[in-house]
Image (cartoon, rainbow, N blue to C red; front, top):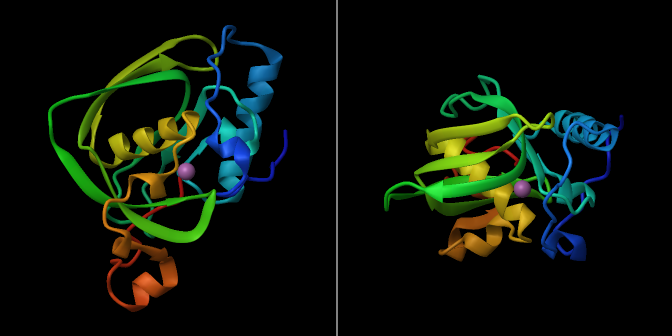
Length: 182
Ligand code: NI
């Protein structure tokens, strides 16, 4: 039960592919989930993948309460998702601002599928099967990318829409509070 250091872009483990879990409801998995929750909360993040704390297992957490700092972000229930699979629904892609706890202080405009179905398990092995859109779909795609060694800057198509948050805010490129760290 600890706040763990978050690996930053450039650390080689962030480029590894994480392995699926074979067992649920184990003391090791519960301890990992608790560390992820504590670490995400301490960083005010909206999502965190196990690989970001150096654990190469297919476990992510995410969630966002309604927050006056992010009035446009819909709330997302706090979720532990193990061995996730994503199925894009439809052809729609949307651009949205993203940040990442492994890329501190920066923001980028990233295309994502607008609507997805995702499936996986919680830490007890209970199945999760949801169809979601918009911010909820974005955060799931961002977190699941981490499990395959992909970070959001890899997905940016126009690198002019990538930079330090304070510079992007000052120049008016980034609308105020338009992104959260995932
Ligand atoms: Ni991230």
